[in-house]
Length: 349
Image (cartoon, rainbow, N blue to C red; front, side, top):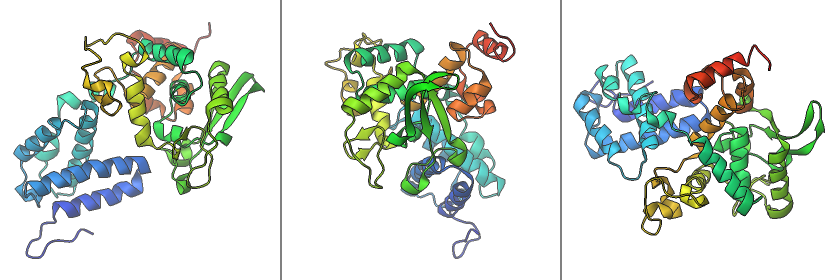
């Protein structure tokens, strides 16, 4: 139950936020809850800074001011801002449903710039850019941490949290099995030791790994992987200097690796690398042609759908995403590509 302040029947914004988060905590995956909490804490701080303690003081004008503050924040890229918009809009919709705020506020938080058809949700690394990165790593950084990380992300389309949660025992080397020669990556939900999967136990799965990718994983283990454990005594597959990579440390690495200048390509923006701030690792996200893990995942899924003729049903199990969500949020293939995907469900070559 939401308490009310003395002298008023209206709950505070803080109380409403806490109630929303309590419900999200019960209904959503841990990673979704944490992201929502971070976004809402930012909104909460903005409200405090502007002396807004109750929704009765809010109007669409205040929402506009918050939207402008988000867009002008130089520490947040466009994708991040779009995620904040989505979370705050969901919160305001929930609050208006229970009459905690005016029903016009969620609509005011809408933005065509960050709609489902907008760039923030549809962004993905071009196939050729991803392939060029893999060729570079295969030639110049073979079986290094960066190489195995990018290889697994591209070939399995897994989320960064799933990548971090892999143990060395989750890798089954390439060998002859039923149906062919391949390796297996076994993704497991282990919340008690801080490596949950987004969809909890339902996200557990064995993923087939083609030999050319499996060889990279095995060579990394045999040559470059250091024998370290994490704080729970588990042995991560991909080892960080402190034991196990965390999702937040995966993102800057992928941002840095996907910059075209990293793998010998000319800057599409015509920038001089000696003068570009995005040349520095910690500023890599500022490169317009760098990509974080989620656009990388989206491209990997689309690549398998469009260029490898995978069915939606087959992709659903491999990438841990429902068919409906896959079609709506991940499949960015052309009309022709989508038609070919549907056809592959019924016809064989």
